[in-house]
Image 1 (cartoon, helix red, strand yellow):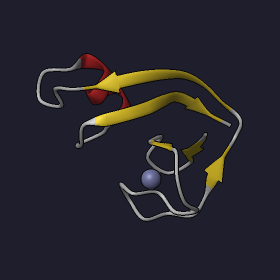
Image 2 (cartoon, rainbow, N blue to C red):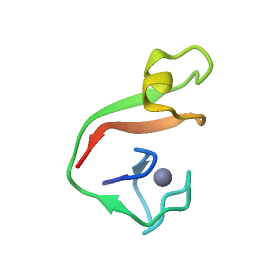
Image 3 (cartoon, helix red, strand yellow):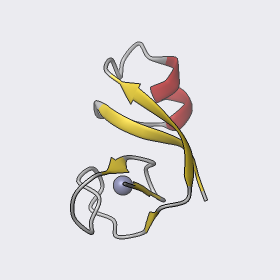
Image 4 (cartoon, rainbow, N blue to C red):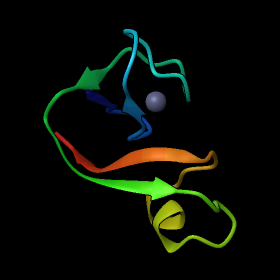
Length: 60
Ligand SMILES: [Zn+2]
């Protein structure tokens, strides 16, 4: 799996991020957070994500 360098979303299939459409994917990431509630989740606020999904906490 890879993580998007722009929005941190975990990308399981394909070469582009399904969230932001970016192609800057990295295999070097650490920590995965499942965001289910973007309005009330502290993780989503700290990552700045607006969609549900799996996100890497850090992408190198
Ligand atoms: Zn992205």
